[in-house]
Image (tube, rainbow, N blue to C red; front, side, top):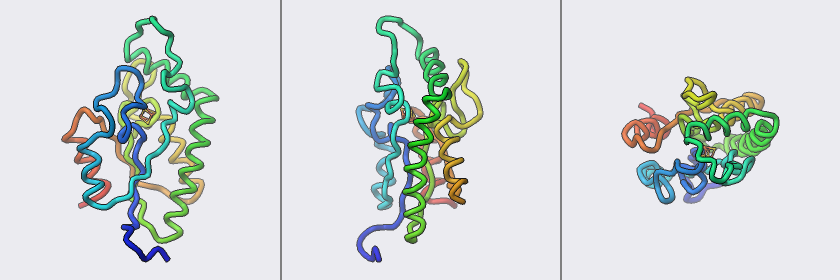
Length: 183
Ligand code: SF4
């Protein structure tokens, strides 16, 4: 089964790495996808499983920002972090993580290689090595990544996970290569 052209290799990628339009206001660094992170995946023939954006699905594209309030990006991130960690945000994360857990399980059961998860460091939600909460960057995963880890563990699985900051292309590429071409 599945003996065709597919590589049978898949990487889970945070939504906004492929679509910067989903970012919180003032935080997009590219018009669309992040080219330096997309190209190695295309060249290697790795399937890109674009994870949903939990903040967009939970809070909307504008993250429920008050027009004209003039809050700093940091203050907005803190507000988003609080929402995502509260009951409603956690429910969104659990629902989305369950769908991803099912997909990962399906790929694995059918002999595919799921290479890992590429997240977004400094994000309250999709951070891997760091997140943002209470006005500072902290050395801990974001709420969605924590939920995804728990969902995978509940299914008896774990995946390598790395986070990137898309405006730091060199370390971002290193992190990606650690997932798709480990030494
Ligand atoms: S880091 Fe996660 S929550 Fe934030 S914009 Fe990207 S996909 Fe959405």
